[in-house]
Length: 595
Image 1 (cartoon, rainbow, N blue to C red):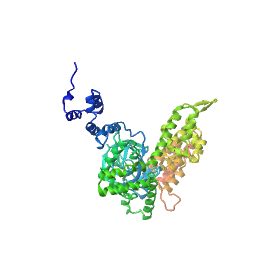
Image 2 (tube, rainbow, N blue to C red):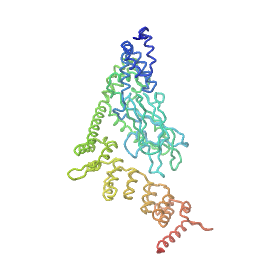
Image 3 (cartoon, one colour):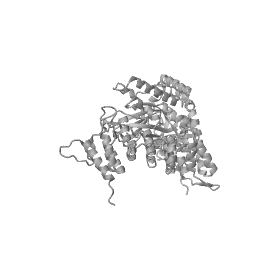
Image 4 (cartoon, helix red, strand yellow):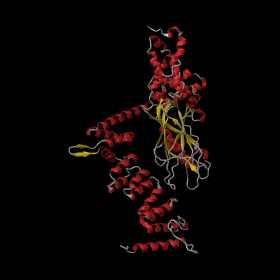
């Protein structure tokens, strides 16, 4: 028996109201297959506009988008299928503000360069519960954010090589740099206190804005000397897609029209393009910070900023500013949209073209490496080692070479990873990354002379990890890498293992560096016995010959217990007792063993 369609008896508006209660898109699609009548009703834009709102509440998108009624179905299709990860761009343009800055040379802009020795530092605080923030301007006034990454700085030049990381991190996104301009706030992510790059993914939400504020929650480490808590961040990056790189016209239009409605959007386009940030100068009156040093730091930051702003088309940016200024006077959103809708794509066309080219090259290299023939590997390695393709030298592509079995060609065996590393070393002035340096040392760890030559040619990246790997091969060479990495605790540890006690004293005096001398004494005793430990202790506790009047590096009373030196009643000269103990230890060492 044929059943009647109950919706046929209902008014059209009631049918729409019924379908507004359908919970998700798959259910709507299933319902549209029931009959022609249901299908025609489900083509109504009111239903799909409502579904966009439902999807918003479930986290698909964090904004309320507006398009013509008939386009909501197509828009929702784009939103569901849109993949922020399909091609990502580096979005950071400039540092805008830091909550505090310890020194003009440690500004927020230091987090945007690639140096391993530059960093931003907060001022010190008495408690570990103090928070800081860093605010950045993105590549365009509207960007879709995918993730934020951060690398914490290790102060190897300080006693104990402290790592100055926060306990947590929160990402805020908005159309202006002020806190009230931020419309998105991420969950609080835990932060590990190490120097590897940490990634904080913002999920599948379409998170839009032109500014990012990174909230750094809590402080872990105190600085030797003042016992205050600090944060030090080596780098901060964000990835995602600038609106100019979105090729779907409907989605581009919806996102841009939504951004226009934000009060801070136009205002922050109009603000002077080369405004100075307002961060570290809050502390400029502190003692010891000269005006000349501040001016040099400011000049350096402006050069860095202008270099990064060359990523965008300056003429198009000026057109954008003019349109925004006109909108602030007329408040005509439609005219503003029409005036700027063509500018964003043109503004970053150079960036888009460059990233698309890089993406094509990366895909080509991946295919060549996975093909695994000698010819394809050679071509892939050639592309990876070209100076302009440094972005290809990342672990994911290198690991393909690492996992590829050696090839046998004309009775000769070729290791793909080794071919790659040697090709890099043949490239003039090429410096291996930390990952590449570690792989090279794993291969050549038995060839001390070859490794020493590579290090002295400055072909390896100078990091603590590379130095630690080198320490198992050649302590002297490792010492030079630790020096370059400013890891002075590791330098002194190498000298201790080498038995070079005079260098320990000399380096400590020159750098004014107070190390963990008890730990050094224990290291020497484990490596060179009691004689070596006493020799080092006597040097540390004796006044140095230069400069005149300088005191010893260490108080003898601090070391006597670890050396097991007992003072008799009435004795006070610990250094004298150390010398006596050394003479006894040397005499005992010269005596033949009982065997």
